[in-house]
Image (cartoon, rainbow over all chains, first blue to last red; front, side):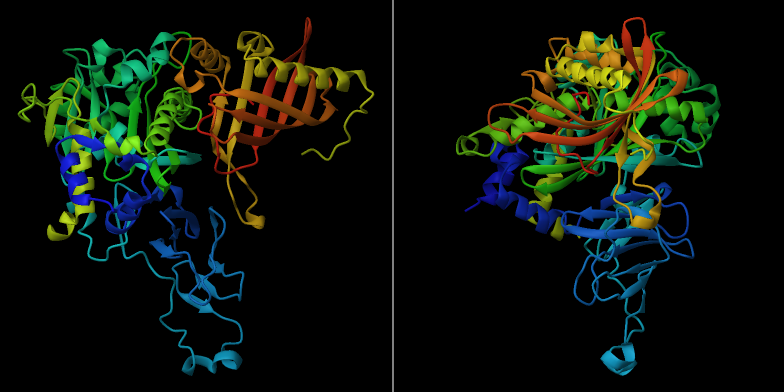
Length: 446
Length: 173
């Protein structure tokens, strides 16, 4: 009974049928047409540094073991026993050379290969009845990595991850490659919220408009000086490839080093950032004068970089968080929120940055608390009959003739398109990709 | 959980520690956070590690380097100041909370004060129709003697879920 053509047409003109934020039919389409093919983040290599290390992660209902095998290769394996379908590994992390199914003791090496099963000769007649050779836990249909971030796709014909990331890789580096040693992740904190997964993804992609009001309390208490409206509207919104994000405008005229010191990076870290970023990446900070803040990589991986005050003396410390909006149903989302920090940063900085993260984001973060309150409420309201009659206006930044109310930002050194000030360009960009997947247009593009 | 022998329940120090925790819970349920801050030492450390599901032999079931909280007095003061603003939407309208404190065991801590273990069940109801949230945790506290009774010097909260089922931790445990 869903008129998908009409829904997608509305979404594409920036008028969002409110029920898509709590609709089981839409969720089934998202499962089958979006999550069945998009690149989905599962883990970072720093979470499994040693041979045998593993974490268990999901893509919707599918559980995967993400392991580093005895030869240090990263493996992503469907966590279901080949015999009777038991979940082979029921811990969420650890170190193991083998995974043994608790049901009948079929045992798999940490590269997924079936190593043994009890009574192979007596029960199966040996290799003749059941050829053990070549049997392995099902590998993720596609697996690829970028800056240590491990992604899977359920579509074996998925394009290479780097091709898919396209111009967004430029921005991804700013969060995940501050030195040649890349980032290390801690966590994740995990918690479940009664909210639709799309709301957080859209918000982090480009909602600088909510910051002055939703997060007024953190300005009131002097925790973070930037989010007041007068500062926030000076920031640039950018869209590039499958990602989009927000930035803050830095004080004018600062050198690369001065701008990084302004947000709290210590002198020890600046040379590594200077040498691992391209001239264009450095110019975004130095010439354009923007510092990245929130961003979303379609569909459900978001990033945030803020620089709150961490003590009574006004010391500012930056932090990075990587977070995933893992759908549980149309009305429930598991949030996985990691703290990320450059692996070669001094220990004192890592601790300070970690504390800054905890105050602002994650399960207890003073920003995130208020965000989730909004998202739960939207999801609640989207469940009923009236929500099917309401189109949410997501056209900010456009005239009635679909022209931007002001031109794209000239001289923005990053790739893609950027606009300064408030606008819902990025959310429409994200919803455009969502529409492509649901309408099946993503098939044709392949 | 400590396997040492706790102080007898008749011990005045145990009774004082028990009363401290119950009075503290009353302040939290009354949202009297300014008074709650007065119970904390200047060098308070308030931590809540992330719990994880691991195999029995793994040797750990909490993350050493990642918590839901890792707070000093500055951070706790900021949280309290925030709740007192007109813009803390996460708790406006406020949740109705009930901190149930039980299984209190007190251990003589030498000159430093008392070590107190307790169980906490936090009931949190938001709005008129949402299902309520429950958070179950064990706590290990260090109470230090001060001029007027005890002050909390350290609290470690060991939450019993790996995936929390509450929309945020805009509450204290």
